[in-house]
Length: 308
Image 1 (spheres, rainbow, N blue to C red):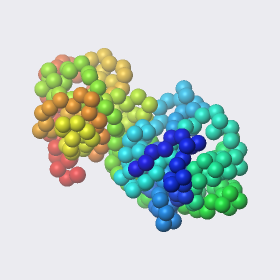
Image 2 (image 1 turned 60 degrees about the vertical axis):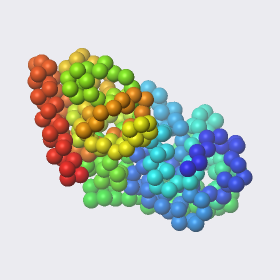
Image 3 (image 1 turned 90 degrees about the vertical axis):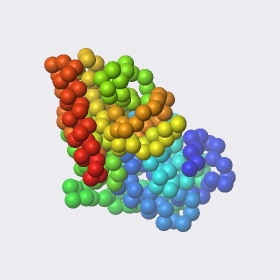
């Protein structure tokens, strides 16, 4: 997949794509419906998205809300067959464009799209003045065919990033997965921790979750993909997400123990998929009680993953 970040330097051979437009946080079933509609145009499949997320730009002090970082989003879009990712920098200049300016200057002049697809709830332009109907009219004037994809619903209701965040925040990763169309994943590099898990007999791969919407704190049964390095491959394990109250920590992170694995993962990129929520974060009377609970957690995680 070709990733293009400078909208003013799009090569001529890249122009003419059919592109889905949006933030695509989580790349859920609704997003996939928009991408599939763009695919049906029969030309190169593209996605137009924004970094940072506009909500981060307008409200930088707001609590973390993203379901995935830019790298994880790109990986997911590539798996869906997207050929061209237009990752536009969201800044004051882009925010100030009127709906007309966005279509004429960005979609038509800079990106050279032949076809654009958005969801029915799409808003764009200065002050979110433009909607899907306006995009269709403005696109026609600029020589861009526009398709509006209907909202997607499951048995639990309309699919949205907000509903997925709620399910994850309440410890319901299986429900989140039904709306996503895939397991929710935390992706990033393994960082050095205090190596306390190694001393307890449970060496863990530590990852930061800064900037991401935190799932409910606690222990999860997980599937893990090591995306690079000597140990690249797929594994199973148990992960603890939270602030480690037993040891007085206060910065949330994700600590993952891989079953039947030996090796050094420092610096490798992991993708940790949440399969099931096992228990909340707890404080223990001492290390022996903690280790006993970790034994029980891993046994339960193996049982869950045997059927996953």
